[in-house]
Image 1 (cartoon, protein in one colour):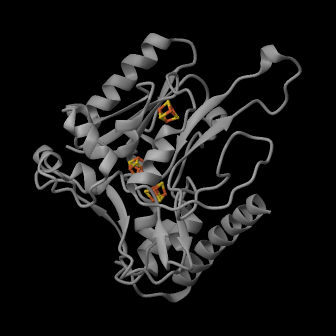
Image 2 (cartoon, rainbow, N blue to C red):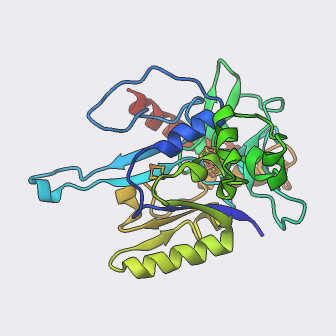
Length: 296
Ligand code: SF4
Ligand code: SF4
Ligand code: SF4
């Protein structure tokens, strides 16, 4: 079994408590941010901000009646078909099991000691969900709170957590059992929009909720990229939540994995291999242009 976080967009109020909890638990620092006609802050994921709430709005509004906000929790999706793992030439980015009885590994993390800073994972991620920090020389993305969910409930009571947080311990003194073993964002959600548990159960809960909402409501993440470990309940098309309707592993990446990557099964380079390298370079160049455009 694998676990997943469920984000029910129909319940999210955009309060961003999850964003703050993520920064707090992962000991991220403040950064200079600015206002650009949106309530989103910061405007991009960074090494200091691994998840953020998107405030999606209609492009054009002629009257107040036409105004809506679609809030989206945006971070690494822990994809089953993880482009970042496929493309990593040094093996630094890999899938990890949460417990010994897990059938599959699914939490994506990057080992800073193995990372060579090539940025291939950043450039090819279908969700643009990981970031490289040249100063800290590391890749940063949501870790599904690996250090929390791998701890037994007793660890919280006995103060054996990796990183004791004084305010968190105060809450535990009140014997709030629901706080234990959950990712920080889920523990903090103010509206019940976030849940955490066995992936199958999260999918079933999402499907039931989508049925109850009716209309255009749907589940996102069940099958995309082999299944994401973030499941979404959306009330409209994915694009209106800033999510790609049909995320795909770029074609150049598949060829790169099979032909060029160190240890590739068809490791003889030749003309086909060179074509694969060119394909990956093209994907990366296109993505870099996109990222520069956004920053600009
Ligand atoms: S969202 Fe991007 S960084 Fe996260 S697992 Fe998928 S490909 Fe990797
Ligand atoms: S699971 Fe943990 S690391 Fe990921 S967004 Fe939530 S708080 Fe942040
Ligand atoms: S804490 Fe919950 S309600 Fe608030 S922004 Fe995050 S997901 Fe939405």
